[in-house]
Image 1 (cartoon, helix red, strand yellow):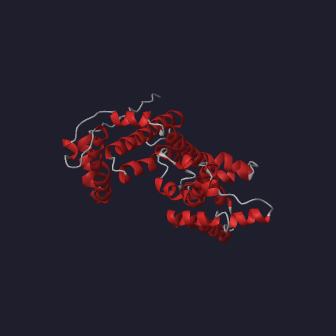
Image 2: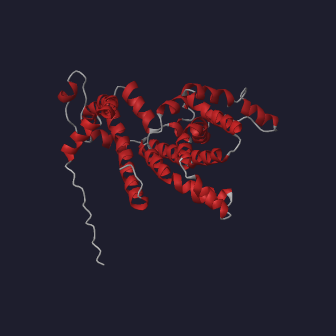
Image 3: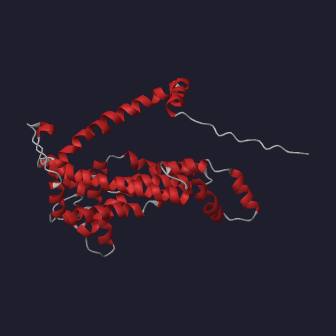
Length: 315
């Protein structure tokens, strides 16, 4: 008996015409995209027109087009300055320190997922989510109160245990630790939400089969839960890499003082100081553009590596 092979027909797509058909068929969905597209166009893409002042000696009375073009002079001035390496080093230390703690929300999500007591689980989630809703100003105020050398709770405990008070906020060596761990406290619970959502989609039958084979809870976490949420982990890691140089100047600025400036001066605080306080708009734009260029390069590189090694990426 002869068998006939079915010919596989690969559908062909005509990009623009198919897009128009799709829009007509799902026009309600595309309407919901309009506010997001308008937001990014108005507040992110149109302002990119002003990036050209990084290559000009911007004079407000002459406008952007009327200001003289000076090329890469602002970049050269920044790279040759005595403070360049200090700014770069401090930015890399704070960003790298935070990146090293990237697995903490994953560990918290895996732990909460394994909790069987629903009341304790809700209490733990509320406790870890709550700091996210506290403003940065309030968080820094709490840090100042708790770490005060004379009246702070932490120093009172140190003195009660026979130690000497420590001036945490005026010590350069303590700045990166206080900045990073206070950030972890504030964002840990909120950062675990996406991983908990991904864990909710794990097939329960996989765990049942693993139990029958005698797998322990820890083995099921390692071999079922983590591989199941690995695509989510990779995507969020790439997004974190894309903002690697963006430490966030608000918190740094609030915690900064003359005594810890050697370890708290970062690129973004310098952009704020030179651009808004000193009015050197072109110079500040050049520094900000340098910062953004590194973020874009890191995002592209890590996205490429992730796509080649794990088939999971942003694009």
